[in-house]
Structure formats: structure tokens, C-alpha cells
Length: 349
Image (cartoon, rainbow, N blue to C red; front, side, top):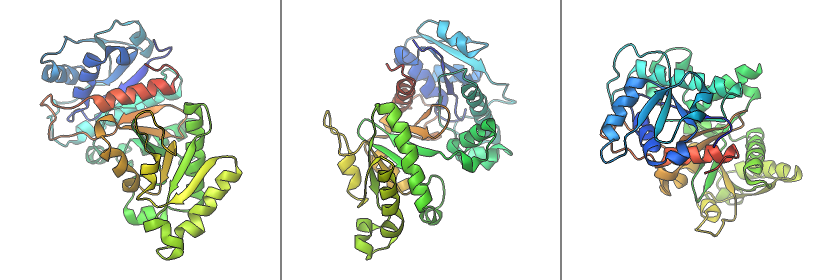
């Protein structure tokens, strides 16, 4: 059992978040024990109806405080009701109401985590377009990562830039940390600076040292084809990335590269019981790092935010409006996100 509960946010109520939450509690009661959901009773009951075919019954228990979740038996889904939806949310449809509700769940759960009331936060997927429609302050953030960063910085009384965070995508075979996240490709190239690369290495080293219990081996991807081929295809590796790697090594980190980005991920990949050459790869931009992780299997992918004063994980997929309401959504990535959160809290299952 967890010493403190884990909060799971509903995600966009028009998407598959409610369904995968229901499936996770039905299919993996040992993993979800001690967890509770921040969401809406009617939405969850609707989702349970969609997925309960051939599944064991699932009771929803309304709770008043996070610690109440620790006392409930297996086969029960603890729920903290978040306000009330003004009208029923149409499944599979983009709406400002759904985006606002999803964000409000995240804001409440993050406050609990920052106050030490919960052990970790697991976020079901929200829709970035719905978040944009939700109005201020939620529309100011392109996704979970930036919203969480702002909330944590506000809690600490510092500027957002003083609380740098990074996105790590991971599965059983590969971990990848990104230098830049949700920006255009043109802006992501401009974001490859000595300071940002070194900061990413510091954040990755600190986070994985805690998880692994030892200094991690970090491989670094180049920006250009063949990592610049000695300057023939660009000088970013020579002028920016390699100096940052050398500075990290001088600080005692086990960092290597930069390597050609079309091969470094294969070198880091774990195959069965055989570990890869690196514990993680630092990629220079969003798609460079996420394509190899997602190619290996979205259903097992987990998104982890590094650099926050709290544990936050999430499934590695979106709201899937096209299949929402059908009961076909796969809960595997959410289950893995809960497992990783438990492991990072020292309460693995």
C-alpha cells in the first residue's frame, strides 16, 4: 500500500481519459489501489458503462480528502468531485467546457502534490485545442508540462524560468529526454543552446540518479545529419552540443556524444534482459526524440516531467476523440504511468 495516495486527473471528459481510468481500476486493482480520481461522477459512470462488458463491476466511492482513498477496498474507484459541469459533455467533440474542466482537475491535483498531500500525480490526456479554448489562464499553456511548471513556480515564489523542466518519454526499452518541447521546428533549432543542453543534462542526471540509485549513462543526440559530419552539415555539434557535454563530464556526469541521431536511439535500446549502452538519450527536439519511443509501442509509453518538485507521469497518447465512447481504448499506457509513479515514490508494484 502507498503511504500517501496518488491522484489521477480525469483528462478531457470528451476523450478516452475516463474510459482508460475505468479500465485501469477494473483490470489492475493492485496497481490502482491507493489511487483516486479527480473528476466528475456522471462522466465516470458513463465511461464505466462503455467498458464494463465482460468486466467485473466497478463501484465509484465519493471521497472528501485524498487520504480517504487509502482505506477503500480493491474493486472500488475513489473519486473526488471537481465542481460541476454546466452541461453534459458531448463525447468526441472539442469544447471549451471540457478543456476548462480538464485544466481545473490538474490545478487542484498539483496543489495537493505541492502541499505534500499526495505522493504523485498521474494525468490522463487533455486536448491542447480544448485547453486553448478554455480561456485564461488555462489557454496560456500549450499542454500539461507548461501548466505544471507555472503552478510549481508560483508555489515556490519564483519565475517560471527559474524552475526549468524537461519532458521524458519512456517505455521498457528506451528513455528519451527533450531539450525543447512544444515549439515549432524552427524555434526548436534556435533552442539548441549551450545553456539549454547543459541544463537538460543536469536535470536528467539528477532525476535518473534518484530513480536508478546510481549516476545514469546519458547519450546525446546531435542536431544535424550524422551529427554534423565534422562541420560539413552544420556546426551546432562543434560549437554548442559538444562543449555542453564536456562541461557535464567535468561536473561528474556520465555523458557521451553527440552521436548521429539516426543511430543513438538503437544503441540505447534495451533488448529483453540486455541493457542498452545508455540509460537515456537526450534529444534536441520533440519529434527527434518521440518518434523512436512511440515506434516501439505507444501502449507502453509513459510521459514523465523532470525538474518539478513533485512526481508527475502521464500516458504517452492523446485524447483519441475518434474512438472515445466506444470502449475500445487501451489502458496499458495509463497503467504503466501509474506503475512508474509508484516506483518513483518508492512504492512499486
